[in-house]
Length: 359
Image (cartoon, rainbow, N blue to C red; front, side):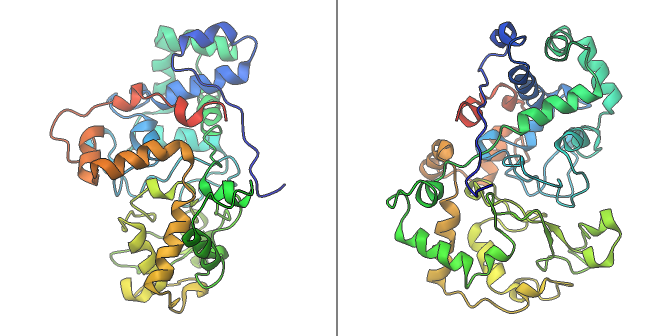
């Protein structure tokens, strides 16, 4: 399989109901559309205020803009919500890799007390009592709502959230020499050499499906053991899943704990981890010494990472640039922390077609 990703053809309508006429001809399409509807519906949370899209915001590459997400009753999560995009090839999921399939992953936030806090049995009962959902599950699966079908629908939708139409892709795989700047090209070279980035970030999505300790565990204020919580192995203390770099311009704040607000902060950290977290424990050997990157070199690497933004997000990028959106304003518009009014669920009505339409 080449590094060029195999794109899925996914058609998701703005309106769900018109799709009903073609479910019997294309069950996959119906399953995806049902998954989209469930992903954006707070019906799956205890207090009916939180949907999957509340913490995986479509405009921000299906990531959150908060350090940690806010769940039902204002409860705070323990880790940053990563992007839900480009998960098709993942061998394990969540920061600690505690599940191996999207079907398992899809159900976990529903039951998590800090997120949606609803038992799966209760979620299924709600869906079964809802005439629309009951009819849709029958249409798609020829069965009433059930745990197996709920997870299957959500996973089917998530598998469509693949991107590979960035300026970098146009240059690297389509041969368009004008798709990226000289700075991006220099950044890619540095990313692969002096920056040592490809020792952890490689492959189609720039994640190797591996776990790494980058020096953000010290046993005191940084005390999340990461992968070790799952494996109970001392060697895994402080190790976390290497995240994708695709669409990274949109997924701040960064790291498992959301401690870095900007890519500049991320690059400063990697350039000399001990200058930022001097007491980090069990750090991978690749980061045992400062990289010695100059400001110009860090700027080029940043330019390369920004070139990994899918072109369908350019509207979001432009909006951020022109309106100087900051984190507090984003929270205010999405009902996140900083909003003094009643929590909104405007993500429920958001049209995802721009991002998961026919590629």
